[in-house]
Length: 374
Ligand SMILES: *[C@@H]1O[C@H](CO)[C@@H](O)[C@H](O)[C@H]1NC(C)=O
Ligand SMILES: *[C@@H]1O[C@H](CO)[C@@H](O)[C@H](O)[C@H]1NC(C)=O
Image 1 (cartoon, rainbow, N blue to C red):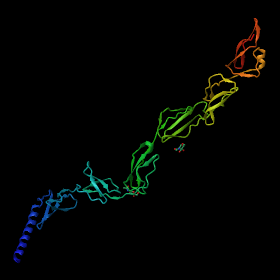
Image 2 (cartoon, helix red, strand yellow):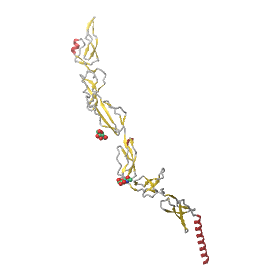
Image 3 (tube, protein in one colour):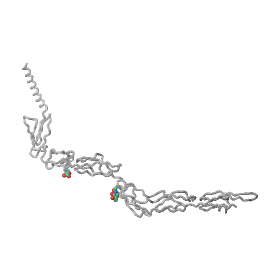
Image 4 (cartoon, rainbow, N blue to C red):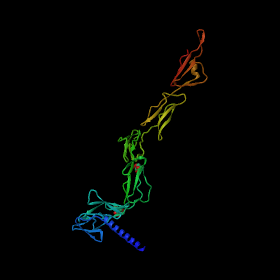
């Protein structure tokens, strides 16, 4: 029973060995030849080929000889001989890599890893050798600069690594000038944007603008002249600061004098400009009446509108009635301007009976008209 087991083991080994060999055979790489080069392989290891190049040539990988290996039926790379003055494979870059420039085979772009920076953005091939770029740690930036009327759409951090970015947004949809996203470049933030708003034309009736415009740009200066009689300070200027006018319009002068005096009347201020009364309405003393419908009177350019008058009432005394034969009264009274008073005259005897007339008294600005009673 022992022999057959040994035999089986031998058969199994034979099969296994042959199979590995047959697989290796099946998976061997195609034969290689290198233009302008020479190859060498050791008979015991056909899976590795060494090659070198003819005078004036060099392997693409940059050394004076190189090797390629066969794995799973294909060569690790194509052995290539290039001319000495050409640059072949890129050198390795610590903390970065190189990218072929699409336009120029003789230059390559340096791409450093995040947080690293290179002194050169491109390297060139100089007489068959690539320049050696260095990716060094980029300097971090401090907190990004403050932009007036803006905020940043990320949490503030103590340090910002080289290459990181922040994004600015203007408040109240103000207009942004410049790029909203800025990057930290080796310790320095790129130029930040600004938030600008235009200023609207001011509406003041005591100034004229030297250059009439509906809108003014940020930082634009508006020059104005004060209108007579407010031109004690003849002109001034405002600065448009982010949508608002910086300063106050100063126009002073022979501003409104006190409202005109109206005999037997008084005024009530209805509008003020600072301590200045600029609009009033008038009322009259008792029994006096305005000569026109009540309205507001304005002071414009330092001048008041012609004020109304208070028209006098008529004073009617018992004596006056006595003289005019009007039915007597005990106490005096006032008949306001424009009003009438209906009265009886005293009785008189005529044509065999007692009669009395009916009269209407009128008053016009203190002048009483009494129709005759006889
Ligand atoms: C980065 O900044 C450091 C310190 O300011 C400086 O020495 C270095 O040259 C800078 N690197 C680049 C690529 O500008
Ligand atoms: C307003 O104008 C004055 C005078 O020109 C200037 O000193 C000041 O900084 C301005 N104010 C603002 C908020 O810009």
